[in-house]
Amino acid sequence: MRRFAELNMVGTSGRQRVPKDVFENLELELPEDTTTQARIASILSAVDDKMELNRKMNDTLEQIAQTFFKKYFVNDIDEDNLPEGWKCGTIGELALNVRNNINQNEMKREMKYVGLEHVPRRSIALYDFGSSEKLESNKFKFKEDDILFGKLRPYFHKVVFAPFEGICSTDILVIEPREKSYFSFCLCHFSSEEIIEYATQFSDGTRMPRINWESLSKYEIIIPPLKRAKEFNDLVSPLVKKIKEVINEMRLLSQIRDSLLPKLMSGEIDVSQLLNHEQGVEMSDTTEAELII
Image (cartoon, rainbow, N blue to C red; front, side):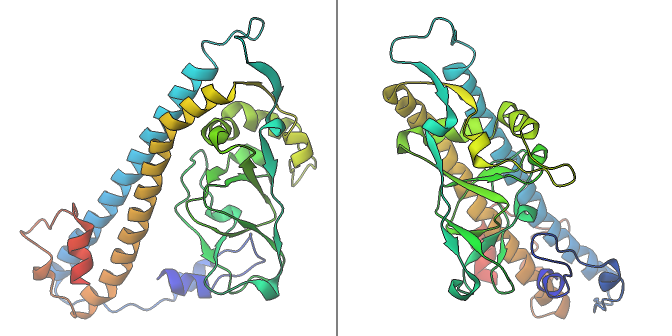
């Protein structure tokens, strides 16, 4: 279904959509037995429930990271009486905008492509991506753990860390900390409501407002000493790592669901193989489901 949708998308890169009538005219083969239909739905719902649980887990992990951030660098810091080694500065002193261009001829088919349409709102977890196969213009390359900041209409609050390397839309700023120990500090700043409000205020353009790096880099912050930033990074990095693991599991679950559906519908896999009882089987172990596929 996803592949069918991708093949029928219209519009330019970054603003593509699937026309409504494409799905209205899609023909599907359904099992005649309604009991079998219900059992198939139960199996697929179990996968969806597990994915939703994982998404909520990542939301909780992100909230924990932001709570630590506020405790370390916001709530207990007096700007007029900074501890020794702390200073007032800008986010651009700690991070830089990486503009590593790649043209269409250099793009490989297996490259993961991230457009603004793939980036979720108000979440640092990037679950989705597209293919570079039909891209027609230059893009930016990014590395795993780079910060991707949506500069077009920044009020949409699209800021994530990259769980893989790939290429992205030029409407996304690729950001990396100048020092690795400042990664978590920078990630929490760039994904904060305060910097989004700042970016919105200093965007250029009316219909399609964009924030540029020159303006964004001037966002004023309190800069902690490297030792303090490293302590915070050591605290938050395991949370980011866990978020990345959950993202990978979500991707596997999505592949399992997409692989199961046609095989269940065609009868290639008997629903009795996946059901322990009438209500279905709980998807607590993705490895078991993967073996069935």
